[in-house]
Structures are given as structure tokens and as C-alpha cells.
Image 1 (tube, rainbow, N blue to C red):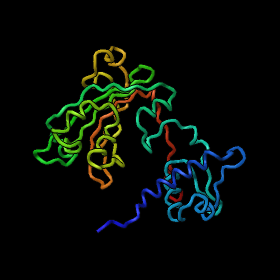
Image 2: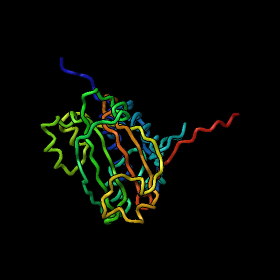
Image 3: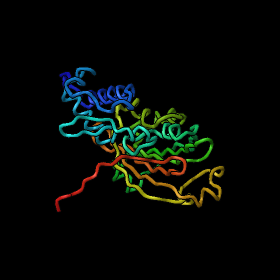
Image 4: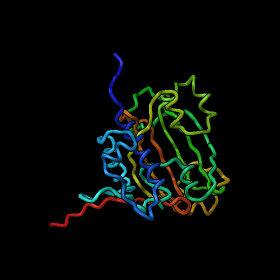
Length: 257
């Protein structure tokens, strides 16, 4: 039977895009207040339930804030943030937003036996094979990020399809989606630090003394698909002198202790 369920997530994402467009058209020097919910929902063509879901997401991201009895307002300070932890941008966009010209160098794509830890993280069976893909991201020809991705070989069509993938230069996420239909929707990340000498397999043209002694932000993350199944494990080493993350956080303080 055909699936007749409405994709609420998709509607909410569309509403968020429309809200962002509306905010970009506002004269925030005159007013940062958004229309009332019933007016705004009609304006962008969605239900109030969908609008409220989108507004809640944008409030969590820090783009807007809501005041009981007063309304919903644009957080003008959030518009000056170039790179955020949430939602996650692709590295080329982070680099561009940080004022640099991005470029990417693919270092290698190979089939590797999964370690026990990655096998457990990605919930692989005993006979599953793993693809390892590593690349560097440059900002004005300076190393700013080194990324290692691990994902099941089956996600790109198996061994017979591997040769085509090994020549692919663009996003691993889009390639996996085009071959398996699986979309990466969210990730769970551990935040650590490292120095350049901790980074494995750096090519000689970027592994000079300055890099080896340089501090990096290390993000170790598990990426999940739209069914909340683990699909890709990543290690990302980031030079925060070049890419500076910012975020607006909601405070949870008990004022009645």
C-alpha cells in the first residue's frame, strides 16, 4: 500500500527556510518582531502547528527568541555568527563564511577491515566491509581541517561499485544518498582536543613543524540516518584559528533554590 503519511519534518524544514527568507527581508533597525502566529502561518502558507514546530527549532538554534505575552523576535546578534555547531555546515561553507577561499584534497579512499570499536559503533555484522575516506580542507591554501570518514561498503553499492566511488571528489553524504537512499540527518559528537602530531597519515606537504605542534579541535562523531540508524563514523581535526565556531545557548538555571 502507498505510504500516505505527511512528511512533517519536510514541512517544518520548508517553513524554517521561508522564515529565514522573511527575516532576511526585514528592516531590523526598525523592528525585530515577527508577525503573530496566525498571520505568519497564513503568510508563508503552512498550518500553525507546522509554523510553531519551525519556530521552536529556530529558537533552539538561537535565531529567534520568544517572550510570553509579547511575541516572537529575531535575535539580531545571531545574524553575525559565521560558523555554528548546530546546525552543522559543510566545511567548504564554513571556510567561505570565515572569509577564505576553500579547496579540498582527497587523500585516499580504500576498503579496510573494521576495528571492533567501529564495528560496534556502526552496528556492522561480522562480514561487513568498511570504506575509509580521508581528505583535507584548505582555507587560502592553508590546512584548516582533516577529516576521516568510515562507513559500510554496502552503503555505496558494494565492491562492484567501489571503483566509481574511488574517483569521487565531492560530498560523501550525497554519494551515499544517491546510491542507498539513506540521508544523514543528525550526529552525536564528542568534543576533544589534539595537536598536529596526533593526526594520522597527513601528507608531507602539510605536515611541517608548525602543523605538528599546532592545537586542533577534534570532533569524533557518529552520523545517523533518517531512521536513526548509525551510518557513518567521522573524526574531524579543525584549526580553530581559521574556523571559529560560535553558538547561542539556552540557559537552564534554577533561580528558586
